[in-house]
Length: 200
Image (spheres, rainbow, N blue to C red):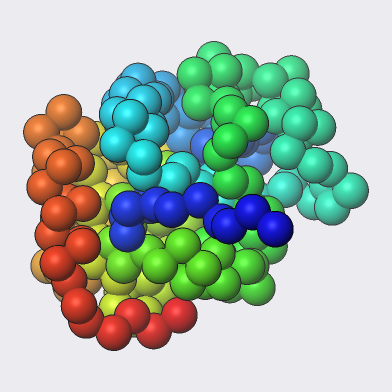
């Protein structure tokens, strides 16, 4: 039996970017989200070069019988196409369906992170003031070290996203360094040196 792959103790979470934006204020959210797509895409590329696992955690828009490919195909046919096509998951990315706002609620995310011995999370996605914030709260309570680049999340209203980012910085001790300034090698080194007990 082959052993599981070995990963750095850091994971990149990409939350709700496979999105149809077919809801009230969806046009507002996509307008705010389009500028962050290149930043998330670049961060993902950089993370994979460092061996950091990429985990998509995504709403299924009520399509409980969909798999990853069907969900991506569906969203590529909706108003979010320009956004989604920049951030489609690759075959070696992890993909988890979530039923509610938090990436941890009623999902196998905790089990996956425990199996990979992850202690630090880089969190990105939409909406910053809802699903990213709720996920960050749950991650903080599980004692993860958080990195939430301020240019890698978006909300319907820019000011709401800014407030959410500051809240995560001040209350959840999140590092909000912008994507192009985030030192992934340093993050990995600090995570490997971190011996604190993580509650999954």
